[in-house]
Length: 481
Ligand code: UDX
Image (cartoon, helix red, strand yellow):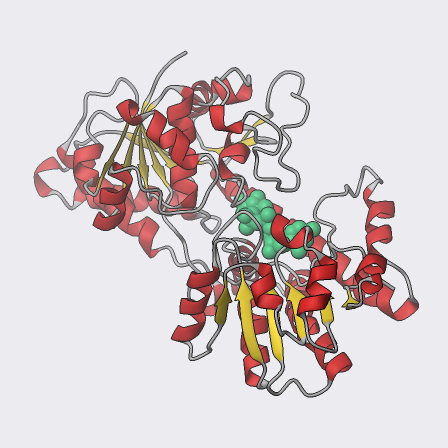
């Protein structure tokens, strides 16, 4: 197997997971991040994100992984450079490319001064989710950076831009990187495809060593859909296309999944009106191979760092070109309504929420992560506080972070150490995130600890309604008849 010298710019979820997995495959990886504290921590083995297996891999391959704040130090000698910096939501919903642009310009200046002696052009591989057309924009900025260095005009190392969107989910990032459904590459260069295929060969052929911490039952964190699945004949599909289509694939995949969830949420609301149970409906439609059973769980809706920002960027891109993306607009509108429904259900049952104690079980935007970006819990906490309720939250990892985020916008949240501490004396509870601790809640104990009317809104439809009611809880799911 060919071993590559790889630079990964941006040591966040995407960069760290990609780089760690490349090191696991045998490649040498240098991470570059402008945050000196983060780099120092990582060098000492402190992983800044909550992501299963990441720490184990990074600590295991210390001999082939290094961290620096200096792009100039990292680039000479590297054969490919992954750009994995964040592209936050900018004005008007479109993606803010300033971090990507800064890396491209810096790289240009460095390449101008460093012809590098590579046998083939440096591959600049874009992992960040960028609007369609950004690949060409990055090429332009690198060239601009190069030509800005007067003495190197016309010289400098050659490079090719490649788009390689990631589809990893937080909480199972390492797993998703090692066991992808497909690898997507966009470039104008056949040679670039071949080099990338070589880089990923152990993943395509699933020939890499197992990750020790992944062995054993439940080691993938108990997340939905994390089983590697059968190995596809002929290896993991390797989709090669032009830059624009690769960039669009990322947006289309996320927009489709977000719309799929909004679709089942819409069906769930209709189920409530007609007396059907959406969990049975999901099962019944999901078995149709054309529909598929994943991402059909109704509830408090989608959040996180990708779906909201990517759907919004796609809508903005369409609008800028004079197209009204009605379906995507509706997916977002349904999602916003879902968050409000948790509070509406409490009001319907309890009436005035003033001074009522409400427990939020789970705060991260989904289980397996401490990420609170666009988390439904934050919206629900703010709503409840504005209605005068006392809000106490429990989350196995994101409690303190949630308290800080809410405090910064003047909303106070009491944080409990475990679900039962949160439930003690609570008039109502909302399951916002389906952590295992929440799914396996001792309902009899919960009923003893809570105060009348002991209302439990199951925002993820994870409990058995009959059992919850039998234990004396006033149970209300989403779309369950
Ligand atoms: C997502 C995509 O899955 C991934 O491919 C992409 O690269 C980044 O965005 P992630 O943001 O980590 O990954 O979360 P994901 O597991 O997809 O869940 C997204 C949201 O949808 C969560 O808030 C989750 O609670 C919600 N969800 C998911 C549902 O409400 N119902 C479902 O059936 C599935």
